[in-house]
Length: 248
Image (cartoon, rainbow, N blue to C red):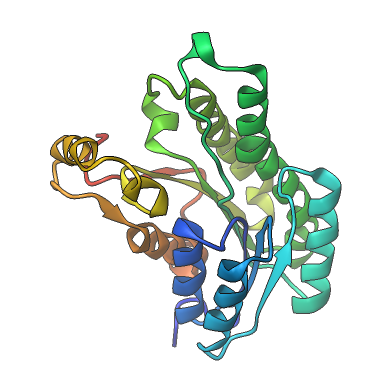
């Protein structure tokens, strides 16, 4: 029996990168997949087809996770299509890096809205269904930067740190109804975004990691599968680093 057999997993920002790896790993583990992204581009369409090839139900929804009304409508559609939501993965996120002295209000607001407000939006909308079910697992994608901070990323760090506080709070609120909440804090993970970093800078990052390599999106996805499964039924309110011991 697969770890997520019969479960319905909703993933935001899943068309590419870590979100895509999460969707594919959950489908391989037997879950039916609902995913969102801002645009129905080639990545969006190809993911829907690739997920269906695993023999699970899969459907993508064009939705802006940072918009409250759009999120509510999307969750209603997901429940209508799948009848339940067992796992929510709040993965949507962006960066707009700059030193504080050069950071615009727009850069600050955009990152906070996409990275933090979106988590409020989705969790608020999904909790109704999970409360009725008296079960659920909420997995929020934070970052080691949310734990340690990072120069030039005060907006991103603040959003990811806020997400950790949010996760711990809702774990306490929703625990009595058998709903769990955990945060994952990835370190330096190879994605399309990090591949654009100059090789010299990538090597410098790698040398700081005790395991001497960057992580893969699948390293994060494997943890999502575990936290979404019944094997982690007594794990809640935790922040788990996936960073090769970069942050200890």
